[in-house]
Amino acid sequence: MQYREGKKALADKEWGIGVVRHRWMLIIGAVLGGEICLLFERPGIGFGAYMILLTGLVFASRVPKKMPMLEQLMLASLIVGALQTARWTSLSNVLVMLTSLNCINGMTAHRGLSSRWMQWLEGWLVFFRPIGVIKKVKERAESPEAKRSDRVERIVILLKVVLPAFILLVVFGFLLSAGNAVLGNWIQGILAWTEQIFRYVEILSPGRIVIWVIFAWVGMALVYTARPTRISGLVTKQWKELGRSGLMIRGYQWFAVLLTMNLLFLFSSISDAVYLWMSRELPEGISHSRYLHHGVYVLMLTTVLSALVLGTLTQHAKEIRSSRFIQVLAHLWIVQNVILISGVFLRLRIYVEAFGHTPKRLYVILFLALVIAGFILLATAIHRQKTMKWLIGGNLMLLFCHFFILQLVDVPAMVMRWNLNLYNNGEIAYPEYRFMWQIGSHSIPYLINIHENSSLPKDRQRAIEDLKEVEYRFYRIENRPWQSFQYRDYVNWKVLEEFKDKHGSISD
Image 1 (tube, one colour):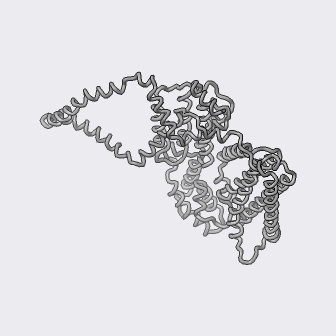
Image 2 (tube, one colour; image 1 turned 90 degrees about the vertical axis):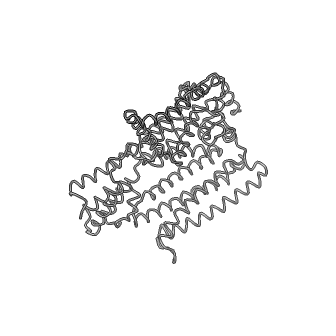
Image 3 (cartoon, rainbow, N blue to C red; image 1 turned 30 degrees about the vertical axis):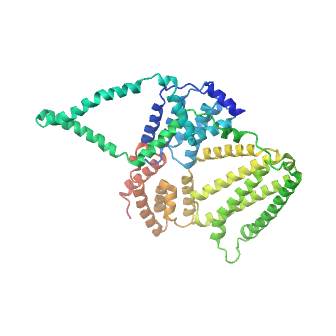
């Protein structure tokens, strides 16, 4: 029903009024914007500028009759993400801007769809629908308004008139220039100018052309309103309940599964309590590295799979979900998963105490916190008899909020400060050089602090040697083009310049 309403709204032209009549101009703008802001430059403020440009193309191609509060919030989140690129860029930053842009595109292009989830999904599907969008472009090109224009025919006539004269001009121009020095100098100037053009044409490598095609495709997907697909209607409609046939057998199946998993997880929790929480003495033949480092990722995968299995319970028949025994066992399994995650936290803590922090380990901790929040939503869905669609929607909103907050946190800076405190207290040794790669330009103040405050001459010497490598890797940060500007790198480079001014140069 919602799909039909969306098609009717499209037929009634309730999708917005275009500001720019010739939308191919917007597509060219998308290509030029990508060339200027992104191509051959390091990630930085240029990516935020390109996202703002694409958002402008969306609003230039269609004027919404009004902008509801939710659209204003998505626009605000995109602007915050774009401004954040001036401080530093990250994967979270990129995901937030892409999600905001596609939601804005879906909401402004498909107002006739009553479900917000359908609008948002259409905002993403448009990039995977080359046939639909190209068909839309073809329809506009074959519209009566386009057919009334005879510009193409006039251009063809003009070429037929001018081309013979141009050919003769070239031939006789070269002949006359051989006997006329003034004319010859004038033609040489023209040739020098055309030579500069051909030098630019040489830049048009196949790879560059492919990237331009991608930029053009992104622009075309945003400025042309394609018809809604049936996919969004199928995804957002009421899903069929599972286990409706054979309720008794399905109920016993879930009882057996939940009871078995609870016993298995109980044994795992007891082994963690004995070998990890109490004695911290492992069985013979198992090293700390194997028990801690490799076990973290296996246990993370285990908790995620547990959440997926429990998530399918929310889509089963209400008679199964409301069973008291099944609800008790399901909540008990959720509690045991949280206990298992606590064990993962303890594993990471032991590893950090031995080797220090890294951005990767901190991201693992943040991911585990996100998983715990997901289990809370899962427990709520089971307790309040919510469906899987509600659970997926809640987790998607939780994931977006997670990345939105994470983009504002300078994780490498936090890791640098924590490790520096551990090193100054003698709790960890001098880090490996690959750690410097992980924290980026924050390695500059880190190494300078070790050089100035360490009591070990060997570490002070290593800090200077590594600082030379870091200086070479971040050479001339302050002179990078504006597209690659990140305030974080600029500040750290200034710290290095001050250190060099104080000591004359980076030397022993």
